[in-house]
Length: 226
Image (cartoon, rainbow, N blue to C red):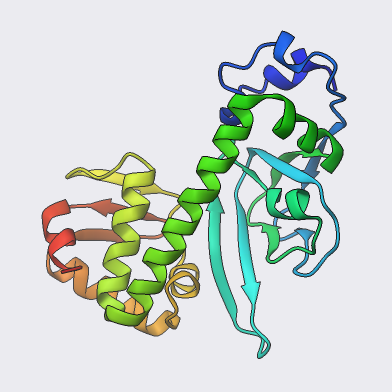
């Protein structure tokens, strides 16, 4: 793929990067389409490409030894992922599959490492995202050990609303996670999450519907976490 073609996707990782910045770097990149529920890569797989989500919805999950699914991430369009395996050459720590039909770009490890080493702005963004991920995991670990399920659901919805720019009265989060996805993300079961969401609705914090959540009152939602 040419530098011009890559930059035409307008991916956040390449914001402000010019064709000249990419000169001399081999860009071994292909576009792939996934069907809903198709697996992109499995946990412990030894592939080392990184990926960019162009359209659709993907989930990253961790499978425990007893078969329980823990949801780690829902990737926004434009996001990149898989960089840990590309950076250290080890096996995948999570599995990623398509929740809907999706289009992705696949970049070979060699291309990504050249970008990381030769383009400072890309290296800085990758490092900052990794630091942010560590901070997020620390916060989630604290929530898992100190908050009730209802509080964890409230914290999850606050983060979700903030990430979508919907942390305001009357704002609606479309294509919202299922109760099972939320449960997998916060270390609970679906029934406990459903009860917690019903309680939050009765308190006037949210108005849930199928695949959508309206933020009725952000202050009440915040109070539910305290």
